[in-house]
Length: 231
Image (cartoon, rainbow, N blue to C red; front, side, top):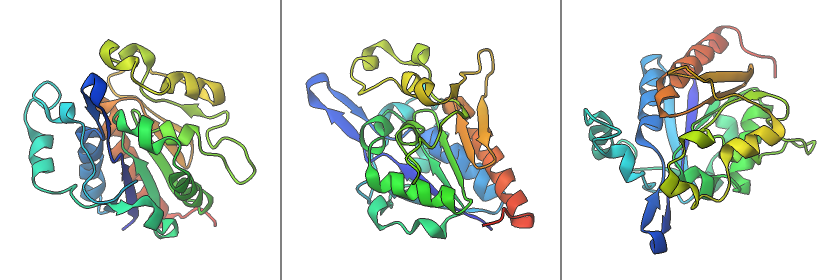
């Protein structure tokens, strides 16, 4: 059984524009289901700890028509998170950064999270992220001072999918930042799109790619239990 650390945004509010965002429900719960089905354990962390703020839109009928993720959220499954600063990164075989616009605000530039990401990567763990979840990966640098994603095949939420009413409120364009350091691909025409940039870095494009990312991560972790990478 592998241990996976899922990172959630603690949330962001812009009162002037009546804008509240955080982590996206499907991007936690869909991969979580795949990972647990494969026998792996998932623990949660966020910048502030405690109950992290979910993006309310992700629980709406428009994005969760069957109410599956709303039910899981209301069950309390994601109510308790460890503050990132208190995480012992070496305990985990993988990290999974959950998307939602909140990741652009509190996860992207958090130095404690960057340190956790680096430790997981340096100890041959898997670093994964979906949708806006790659935001902190973009700004994570290795101990040699190079971008973690330098030159890699990567994906994340594209500019042409950003809602017009939200785009101007965001601190940066994820697609633009990813293009500066890696081989960005948005997988045109594919319903699900994930990319292995290396055997230890996995990114997914959007909420609809969450299940595929969880399944790929679960399969890789199961494989590594039998054939571990050398430390």
